[in-house]
Length: 113
Length: 113
Image (cartoon, rainbow over all chains, first blue to last red; front, top):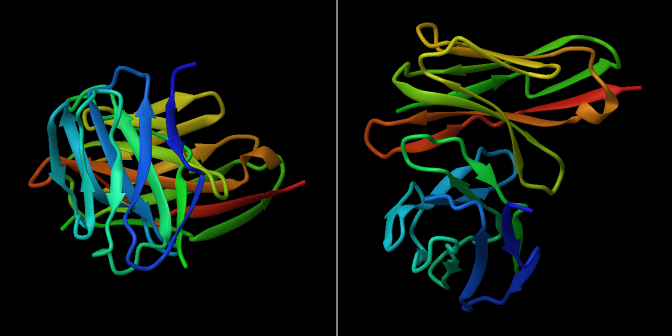
C-alpha cells in the first residue's frame, strides 16, 4: 500500500524538551510539507521541501527544524524555542512541485505537559 | 495577502439532500484549488483538484466548480449520506512569493439519518 505514515500518533512533551515527529512516504513524491492545525484556525505551513537536501521555511517556522536527507523521509523537530507547541501536526507530499495535488498523513497530536 | 473563506462554518441537513459548500478567495492568481475532507482527529483526504485553467471536476457524487475571476469555488454533494459527515476544507495553491497552499477554516457538515 502506498501512502504517508506519521509517528507517533500521540506525543507528550515536557517543557524544555525537543521532540521529533516522523513522516515517511512511499509514493515516490518529490515534495513534502509540514503543517500545524489549531482549533478554530486553518492549517498553517511550517516547512516544505521541493527535493532531497533542500527545504524552505513556511509561515510559522520559528521554533521548528527539519531535514530532508532521503526522498521518503521529512522529520520535524519541535524545539524548546517553540512557545506554544501543543497542536495537531500534519505531514503531506505531492508528486512534484509543478503538479501540486497534496496528500496527507494521519497526523501527530503533540501535547506539552 | 491571499485569504480563503468558507461559509457556513457548520451545516446540518437531512440524509438524501443535495447540498453546496462555498469557498471564496481574495486573489485570483492561483495555480489550483483543492477540496479536502477531514474526519475528527484524522488527516486530510484529497477529494478534488481543479487546475486554474479548469472550470470543474467530478468524482462520484461530488462536483467542484471554480470561477477564478470572481474568486469562488463550490463543492456540490449529491444525495448526501450520513457517511459524508465531516469537515470539508478548501485550499488554493499560490505561486507568487512563497509557493504554498492557503487553507480556509472549513465547513463542518452533519448529515442526519
